[in-house]
Length: 497
Image (cartoon, rainbow, N blue to C red; front, side, top):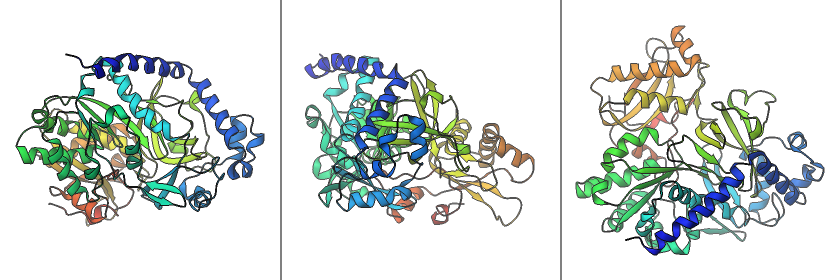
């Protein structure tokens, strides 16, 4: 028997699908309109005056006047906004600051304006509606859904509310979903992550959970606690759980582990949200990549990742991007970020419509020896090496070993196994071969005897969580970098050799 709610979801989904097709099929024109709108709206701001927005007539003018900046470079303007001044980066004052713990610059305060806030909420909603439209499956709207997120408690700074993005978004759940949504407000406000997950387990166990959502590494912790408590697979505890929504990291390294915890396959939707904007969501179950949000008050530019650190790298718009190239994504938004480098690298999987995958972070790479290895490559190597085996990996990160006690330098892979390989060196060899195949620089260094093949160091069970706890980053939106160009992270690891 179909409920009224799920019956109404389908025509609504169809309407939204048509709207999205309209801009997705006119990408260049859509982005041009966003660009003109942004420049016109911000011409009277301090930033707009400093960069002569009034005489910007086209994209070329913009590139000449507005240099690419990261948070550090934009900070003098942000500090004025935080101090309570208005008309600095965008007209008026922001309604929120999303506070993020930057890996490089301590806390960042990312403005969210009354113009940008709705785009965060709409994109998340549209991702689910596109899924309903494609699959015809709307039954899950009658069950309970959970979003593992940061605390919704907000502080105030000079009249502007301040909190984590996931906590801010918690205030915008549509009325028709309020009754279906877990955890309760009280549980959501628990600061300590482990205590919070324990409380979520208690709250959700008796319920009909149909959607579960969050960053894979933290959902994994929730699933493991459910399993420990009941001795059952998650899919047996929640018979109608059929949709997993995730974002923030590549799901592939977790997929085998999740299917084992759940006990069956479930559909999944990938999202690409950030405090700076909601950039993309998966719009098709069987297409690779996520639909880039071209009509959400965000104007996109791209710079080839391997040219990014050159003196004057070329900036391009979507009309000039190519499939399969690693780009640094630069954004200008109706929250007042201008030619802003969020630090992510993306790769296009399609240009009709424009779909992307997140390939890594421009700061997260290993090039201690000139190899330019990126996150996507190490994740793919791990996936290929463990495919069709019983090996299951909980978490991993990679660091260079520049001064080994003996022999040539190498890449050291720190891996926490859920299911151990029978032969560690055979696994290392498979991963190394995949990496050589993907990355010609790495291949040359191995063949040229500059590097020896990679080595695996086992991390004890729970080691990654212990590490995140020790640096005060357990839970919420925090993620372990897949790789780094130094050994700062791995020095803190409890090894298991």
